[in-house]
Length: 370
Length: 240
Image 1 (tube, helix red, strand yellow):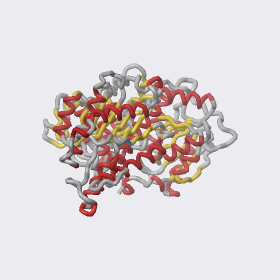
Image 2 (spheres, rainbow over the protein chains, first blue to last red):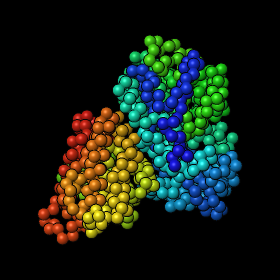
Image 3 (cartoon, rainbow over the protein chains, first blue to last red):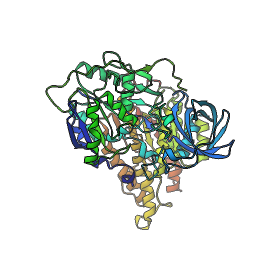
Image 4 (cartoon, rainbow over the protein chains, first blue to last red):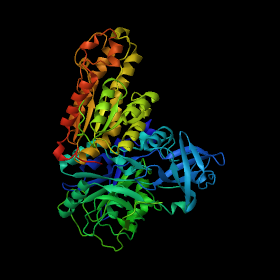
């Protein structure tokens, strides 16, 4: 059953790409034997909300699907930025869905056991701010009963919550799964621990990855709140001072760490807000390597990789994926890209890094997003 | 009942929280200042106990696979993390108690689902939250309520006893595996208590010979605290 939705973890593949463009094809279980003592792996331990909620737009009487897409403020669990979809479900590609009823401030939505009020539109006709009626426990109970994880047209069977929580999932604040984390299991962590490879986490509220609307997609990713624990920041400082590698599990970890980066490659612990995109011109200050899914040029996850590797190297990826039958998407195979850092035990550990200006932007201060 | 607030900030989830030992644990932990979420099947009872104790009530059946992650979502979403999970929800199997040769296989399966597979699933779903707490230096602990029927062969207790024996061993193995991640596992035997479950099993028992569930709950809370890093190390002093 799981196999149809989610790749069998034991059969998953891993493509590793070193800083010189050298590629290796490995079973993903080989992750446990990569990296060197003192290196630090950092993952996003956010659990995923059942952020897709079906219901009725009371003013028009029309069906509506609301996808919770971002927090208004992480401290206010009743308010969300949301995207409206019309009739239909995940079986239609997002691009082919009926347009949603048009919503106006004050409109009421009945979403199964939940009731939400449209507060105000946000920059796009389909994007608006909503507020659920009730307290935190009521909203969570309603979402637990009636909400579904955001679905993907490429996954034929409906996904339920257990399909989208990674093994390390803790606090439910993500809107889509931090899917690179599907590659992690407890066995791998135990082997890393024995080998002296560090493991730490941060919690980053991964937002919606795609809306199917090209205009709206230009606004993605929305600003995403994150929290970096003190002990994670301390572990980064230790690894950096010993010239060891920082390996990010997934793009959300890159966003959070680079957003919290100090000039010396250490990071600020605590709460922050990641905004903007990581791209070709971003100068990475913390992360030396990224484990991510199999993505194609043009996808936002792929474009982020341009901060790690040049176009000539990235151009080789698609043919390699095709030739070796790599499976794409959130539940597929994985790749590991390093930049100027050796991932396998080797006498020359830290190599000089390419230095490009334009540090990644972060917002401090206000926690209000929408 | 002790009224000190030395558990302030401890985040605890309890299954079977509206009856017997589970209810006694909810009440005691709330009084001692912990932040508590409890799980039980019946909405009206959950609401009543939530109103009485001000703990967070979650409606769900740990014996049902599809309820597990929705329960985990509400536990971590309401408490903002988790330091301790107490799997207390239990079922007897056939009632009145029956010899194994008269036990329907569906009754044995049901006992295994609630007493063994349910705790396994819920612990797995919450393992990430428990490990996160351990990484923060707060430690974390899973307590699976066992029974002397897990070790002694009592006639008529086949479904219950074999499920608790399996739970006891599951706990022991998990304790070994999770030690390095900083998660402790315990499966205490609270003894024969004056609870609705015991009354179902032994309707004519002399209740004056049975333990009060409140006393057993106090012992379990002490065991829980002993399994966590000392207060000086931070876990109970932290107010999230």
